[in-house]
Image (cartoon, rainbow, N blue to C red):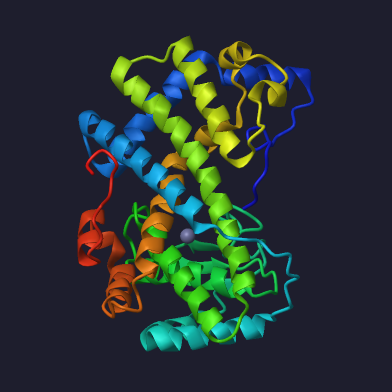
Length: 360
Ligand SMILES: [Zn+2]
């Protein structure tokens, strides 16, 4: 969750020359096409649509990415270097309990149950989760052997309470829908909505807005990274759907898109300087992080997109909770029932118009 200029560089350093060669071969031109074809299959299955409809879906995704960018530019957050005071685990638990008792007492009972069963786990080597944990330093809700847990890498500051509410609301969806498939396009939407309610609650009980802003800025920075990934992949996927193959010119355009994207975060970004070679060489070789992500996590695009669309609609909805008293009870129902509802049904229930640039 950090902003940086060299975000496009491989995070794995390859020292061995042999290994370097293998790595370059692996990401060869032909493999790119195979990877993208595979990705098209995954997206068609996930959204349960034909190739033709997939093109519309990809356009809709690009539109949401652009709208999300406009929204975060309007946000205009300022970062004040405020040292974070220590908040103990017990205090965090107390804050979450107070928040949940205001929102929904039945969720408080589930939270108490989670604590009693000792299912908030801080040790990544805990035998209950060690084989399925994905990251060592990020809060996660985890399913293992048909049981649900929250992995808690405590920071012992106020951010813990927001992370815990985010993961706890994923946990609610999971325990209320045991055995259902894991992915839903709006899965992050509900958790990001609840995390924003937690931010409001913390402000209400006296926490400094500047401190809450730190969370918001981190959220925004991680969304920007998600946007970079999605935007450039979608460009290539649409090209492949249209032409059935990716040419060298397509790849050059794609590299320009990556550079343009990076300039939104770092205005001076120069991809040729960053990689110490020309764009043409880059297009031929492509040892990018971009592909590694697609290879190591085939759900990279749909997972990243879930955060982008989630942040966009959660922010819109959060602005209206004071005037519209139905939002909180509706969101409780949606969070509990998420896998059984389509994105369209959810947005209709919340009176949100599904926005796209092409339609408006
Ligand atoms: Zn989440």
